[in-house]
Amino acid sequence: MNLELLEQTLADRGEPSFRARQVWEWAARGASGYEEMTNLPAALRTELAAAVPFSTLTVEDEARSADGTVKALFRTADGHPVEAVLMRYRDGRRSVCVSSQSGCPLTCTFCATGAMRFGRNLRASEILDQVLHFRRLEEVNHLVFMGMGEPFLNYDEVLGAARRLPEIGITHRRTTVSTVGWLPGLTRFVDEVEEPIRLALSLHAADPRLRSSIMPVNDRYPLPSVLVECRRYFELRHRKVFVEYVMLAGVNDSVERARELAHVLDPAVFKVNLIPYNPTGRYDGSSREAIAAFKGVLDRARLPATVRLTRGRDIAAACGQLAAAR
Image (cartoon, rainbow, N blue to C red; front, top):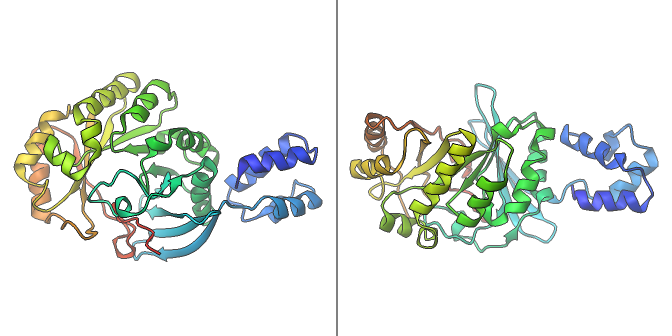
């Protein structure tokens, strides 16, 4: 819900300040509406239902995968599309992948969101409402800012949302912010954020020319400068930086590209997630054999690496597929 509007509405009514906290606590526990908030006067619940929409987002569509993944397409009050995903794992993890923008202005060539028209930054309440939508289905315990948009282009709202997540049941240690290397926001994150929020870097090529062809942001903020900030993050927090590396057939998946990656990443600082690519039109995904050979190079270099389990491919909910085409 729009927490600022909630607080203003309550203040205009002359309600005590703790009322806003009561409402938020109910929402954070998965309440589906004001009518469930039994410690609020009935008249107040009625007025809030009329004055403050329970969610800043409208659900337009929801798709469910055979593997249990759920993708929701929302619209903001001014009509911008937003997608978010709930991923269910056998070990009990319930991870939400949220968007920080509607669309993305950075045009990474492998990402369907990058081909969309950029709408705008999302407000903290709109980010939280993506989480609360799934919290009303079941408890959630992990979150990644890895949906639509570059989180560090919307730094203040992203951090504002992240700081409320423990109240929903997602600790800071189970929250990850993923960046393509937007240096101004990354530097602020390293310098300012005291909470143990995890950092992930969307890298995808260690060679400068190749990375720039895949991710134009590399021309503006070259990878060496980005890696300096990642190392500072590790030195200050003693937590490894996750590196996301999407495997594109014939583009970045050769043994030589693996050697380049191992050369630029310090095994003490970084852990690599190799991501089987879900085609969005321009590239093909690497074969299992190519991924295994690539990982073998990293293993021999003692660079920690895993192959990500793909979720939601059949509903276009996997990494790189969020596009809100409707």
